[in-house]
Length: 122
Image 1 (tube, rainbow, N blue to C red):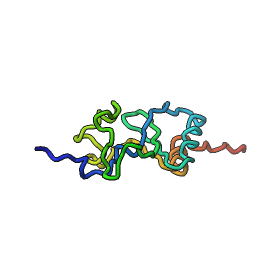
Image 2: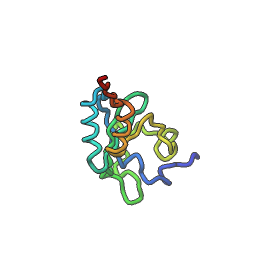
Image 3: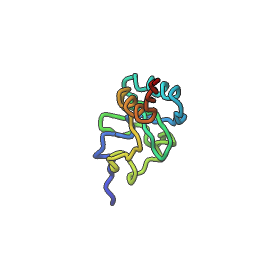
Image 4: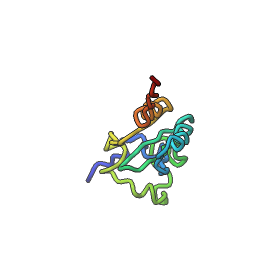
């Protein structure tokens, strides 16, 4: 019988919610992302070109043994998790971009929108 990884896991997939957001294009769009990052437990990542906001929030049905108390009636999203692509097994998420702070976003923006040098009059 195959080993059940959930028995060794800390319920990693049950400790956050990731929701798609519109891809920021302009400096103004990025101000919204900076605002998200000003909040505790928030990160933003890009995967396969799509942007997501990640909210750290523990599922209320994750018990002390890190198992699901409503496993037979868990939501559809939870049913989509498989051991071959779960958070415990994969380790590295392989994000194209991952921001956990305003400072990280500001560094990215400095590269994406470099300040234009002003031309000096002769």
